Amino acid sequence: MGHPIRHSLSPRLHGAWIDHLGLDAAYVPLRVTEGGFERLVDGLKGGVFAGLNVTLPFKERALVLADEADEAARRAGAANLLVFSPDERIMAKNTDGLGLFYAFQQQTPHWRADQGPVVVLGAGGAARGAVAALMAGGAKDVRVLNRTLSRAEAIAADLGCSAFGWDQTERAFDGVATLVNATSGGLSGGDALPTPPPATCAGAVAMDMVYTPLKTAFLQSCEHLGYAPVDGLDMLIGQARPSFAAFYGVSPPEAVDSRAILLAALAGQV
Ligand code: NDP
Image 1 (cartoon, rainbow, N blue to C red):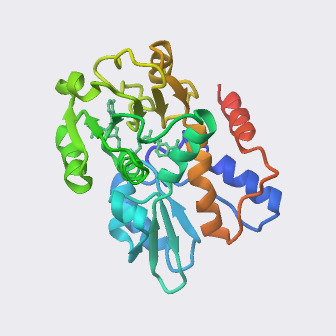
Image 2: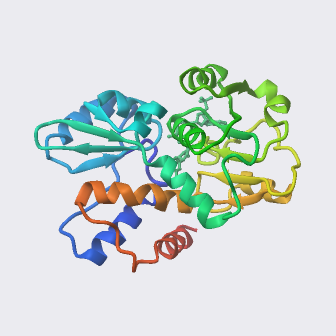
């Protein structure tokens, strides 16, 4: 569920897993108006739906609706997964951090969360999940850089990282070793940053959560500057796996080549 939702490849991924296992289930995209989120969740809980994955811009509001939350969602202050039980209770989880680490493992196996300063661009629900997971994973110096400084400051107050606005990019980027784009700028045709990221040292990594297109303009410019690029597809897979298990009580099938399915879906969209 999100707004927008058309870009999401989650239905393709879950659909392929459902088909492979022959489950009597469907994973459908739901576009909800910004004001309608709470009402729709209220109508779907209580066993009407198994649950929801929540995408932009609702992850923080999703946590507020929940009766219980796992540690990752509580720490982040945002949830990408709501699991409904028949007694109307809502369990909130955050699997974005698992997805982020899975993406680094797959595409830059040498990467470590504590290899140096981490700059997270954006201060929405996905950024919250990323900052919480990076700090839990050993990152010592996490800096949130956002167009709206007050939202970055809110994350800093909650999680103990530091906050920067767009007029402070030079300080924010000093010595950066890991760069994570958690803005939706690439989706809306905007830019994640007012200026390009800085040239970098060997071993630095840049990750973009946006995967439509697979090589975003941001990722291309980072790669050009010497960062090892990590695209958003493996994060999608890594956060979807625990969601699938929560909805259907079974793990996604290992035999399915999830990345190949998503690449084919992206090729079809061109
Ligand atoms: P939110 O709507 O909660 O937050 C959006 C963030 O992007 C805000 O920080 C906002 O800044 C910033 N932003 C929006 N437009 C622009 C722009 N034109 N220029 C610069 N900054 C901009 O979204 P989420 O945090 O939920 O998601 C962020 C992105 O990450 C989405 O594109 C989503 O699809 C992707 N994502 C991908 C995942 C994956 O599995 N690959 C998993 C999770 C998220 P401001 O505060 O100033 O408005």
